Image 1 (cartoon, rainbow, N blue to C red):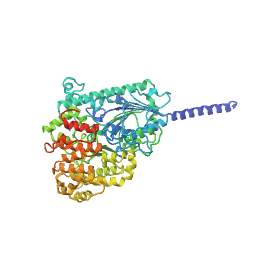
Image 2 (image 1 turned 120 degrees about the vertical axis):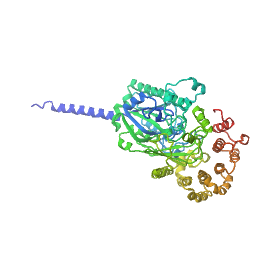
Image 3 (image 1 turned 180 degrees about the vertical axis):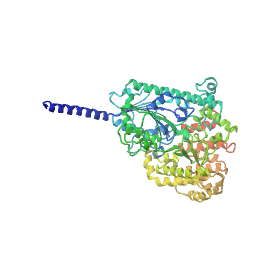
Image 4 (image 1 turned 30 degrees about the vertical axis):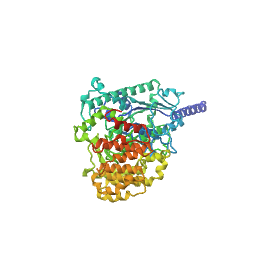
Length: 625
């Protein structure tokens, strides 16, 4: 046997092997593209792919066949600016000061943290956004290479350059339902109003059914837009190199969903199409349903993981896709946290913790009805009709809940009660579940720590939003004490009373505030400490005076309107004026003729768009503002 050519052959084989190894290495160095297709204001309840009675969405369903359906994705907040800021920062809003919708003052990004898009951009990605941002933080100008109505991945220059493209479609926004009565009476919907599945809390009326049917029509249009984006990627030869996410930017959109932290306010549809060329980055098969809980704080870390970038320590989220992510572990995730604070001119403070099928809701100001006036919400005929029916006493007990004081805490079985109308908190059979979730939520708000236990006016007055995280960390123990004071409302009154009395004399303004609020939460039970609260009507802090005015009004001790007017007329803090006007409207709208407003007595020293909304409503309550 001749070995004449053995040495050159070995060299040739070595060269070929080196070529293939290098080719694999080059392939491994490639990173996927990302496209986010976002629809505004829709929970998963409007898509048949997720919930019976929803619209058919064939393009989204086709994505699912080539990817993953996430049955439990949550936006953390039930409104645009807060949810979108949570998404971009991968951080819980109450921790970093971005929890209020519409921001009255923008927060600064936390130290050692950038929006996740910046980390992609620094890794060589082209970032484009078409076109909505709506952030509650000051944004680095380099977050987007192009954020405009013309932004597209096609502007990235080199075809080899990876990209992240986000596009938002507003056809499903709640404003699509701000039609007038002429439209309702003349225009027909493609979906039959008679067959729609109304939420259990909604009055069953022609307007409610028409509104729901019209919204299902809008979801079909969104699905068509999803199909167009997929088609563009396919035309560009990019589809199998691109992870495509479709999701809603928060829940909604009919009354008591958007703007409210119930399940249909934060439970969003999420489908991820996995590209053929990068399916090795995902530990799951095509057309698989993921039941584990994922939150908006997780979305940024997920893209970073898929791009080979470590999650920054300052982010709250963790990846749910990526080469190091085990989908068994993802499916084991069963907890999410949500928050609801101010929406436009309407204040409330609600925190929720969902674990498995149970949703725990803590209403820190339970005397504020969900239906409290919000001018933008009430542009929808279904909203105004609901209130009219309540005033006319034409609702059943479940439908009345929206316009009544809330319970201090609520527990819902979301599987059997998807629209959260049956409160199990007082049922002894669920005592252990209630106790567990209550403790988990208490630990969560303390660990953030949650800045909302100071009023928004206090945070702005003390420049907290310039470095919210540092303020929270330096005041962590104080915030924990404030939260414990607020939670006196969870005790039986006999145990709570001495604690409340002691807290009323605290040197900490927020502790005095929450002691009064805890007392007010007990209603007439707490009338016997009125003598201890009366001096706080003249407290050195106007924020404490505001809570004392609420207490005397709620318990029928005296008319709170003159006390509230005194605060409004004697402060130079616009946000404090807005906080006081929230109570003015509460007493005006829900206490009949007991506490009418005399607008001649309200003469604020300062102004603002949200203040104007409140004043305009009080002047013309029957006008859609």
